[in-house]
Every structure is written in C-alpha cells, then in structure tokens.
Length: 247
Ligand SMILES: C[S@@+](CC[C@H](N)C(=O)[O-])C[C@H]1O[C@@H](n2cnc3c(N)ncnc32)[C@H](O)[C@@H]1O
Image 1 (cartoon, protein in one colour):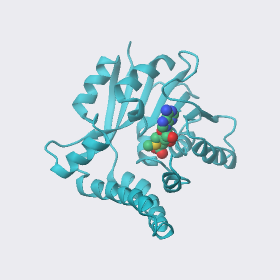
Image 2: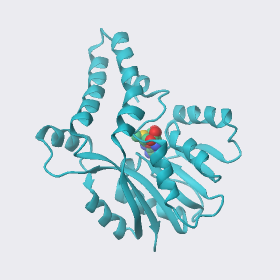
Image 3: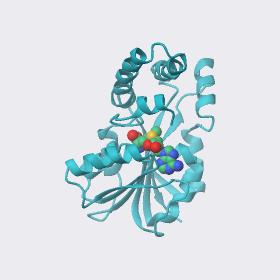
C-alpha cells in the first residue's frame, strides 16, 4: 500500500461495508451446527466481523489476512476482549491457504472474496470445508438494471466482474453449493459503519496534504467512491450469500 492509502485505511473499525445485525442474521440462518463450530474468516481485515462472530457464537475462529497491521489491530482486540483461546489472527494468502482439508464447519468472508474472484474463491476454498459445511460471503452485486452511465462507468472500472444476483446464483449452483438465503446489506452498513469513519479520516488528511497534489488526488477518489454509492445505492450493493456444500 502507498503511504497515503495506508494512512486512510489504518485503524478503521472495518475495511468494507457490514454491520453486526447482518453478520448475526447470516450466522443464525445456518442450521444444525455443532455447539462450537470451527470458523475460518478469510480477508478478515481489522476483524470487526471476526469479533462480532466471537460474540454471536461460542465457536473457534481462525481469521486470515495478508496485511500485518490489520492483524495487529485485531490481535489487540482479541487480547483486550480475552478471546485468545478461541480466536486466532494469522497471516495468510487467500490464493494459497494452507489448512488441512475439511477442517472448518464454516468459511466466512465479508467483502473480500472479490479479491480472488467469486467463482474462484468458492472453488478454491471448498476443500477446507467439512462435508455439508457452510460458506458465507458478502459480494458486491448489481441490484438493478440500466444504471445511469456514470454509475456503470465507475463500476466497470472498479469491479468489472460484478454480477447480478441471478448470475451469482448460477455460479453457486455450478460450484456445488446450495444457496440457503441471500440478503442485501442495508445502506447504513455502508454509510454509517464504513464510510463515516473513513470520511473523518479523509477530511483530516486533506489538511495534512493540502500542498501534495498526488495525495489530494487519492483523497478525492475516496470522496468520489463514497458519493457514487450515495447516488447509486439502488443499483449496486453488498449481498450476503449463505451457501451449504452439497458435493
Ligand atoms: C475490503 S477488505 C475487507 C476486510 C474485512 N472483512 C471487513 O469487512 O472489514 C479486504 C481484505 O482482504 C485483505 N486481502 C487482500 N488480499 C489478500 C490476500 N491475497 N490474502 C488474504 N487477505 C487479503 C485485505 O488486506 C483486506 O483486509
């Protein structure tokens, strides 16, 4: 990460849209779990959803990210909340995870599977699931057809692979999972949980970097992304997909 990008993204509560209520809703929809399920949280970032899961379940959670400062931030919380016995933050690459086959009841990934790709992630991570295990991910999804040109241009640049719900459902079925439920994150999970703390940071950095055009350009891109969401939230959003392994 460049310095300015790191400064924008260091010490935020979360690195993508999400909220406690949605994490809990998704978890509670999973049926017939063991009392203490083993959970792998991939692309955990600073670990807000990891800690939420630790509150919702008595399970053991392995949280993986490749960015050390996010892991350090999560580790501070693990210690302050006394969760060392059942939550581990480990460095790892989602493209080449190194766990024994069939070791988890649940794979969880909020706002991160896009990095490896929705289809690729569902295929690559499956081997770590116990038979009939669950995989729960949130994925940026087209919600409404015919977006305004500005919205389409922005997302074709930022995430050209974005599909609609039907497109993702076809991938889920082809990958050997059954879809239990899907739901769209509320706008507050973007605007209040993710963008509000980020915006405060961006405003401070605009003052710090007022004479640095390159940094100001990066900060303006953050504003543009947030305002694009505000304008076009009806057209795209994060959808939680709750899947169960069938083959
Ligand atoms: C958009 S953030 C989401 C983080 C977190 N789940 C959240 O919602 O706050 C994506 C995360 O994926 C991590 N990441 C990026 N590439 C990765 C890789 N190859 N392996 C593991 N994690 C990766 C980033 O460091 C970042 O924490």
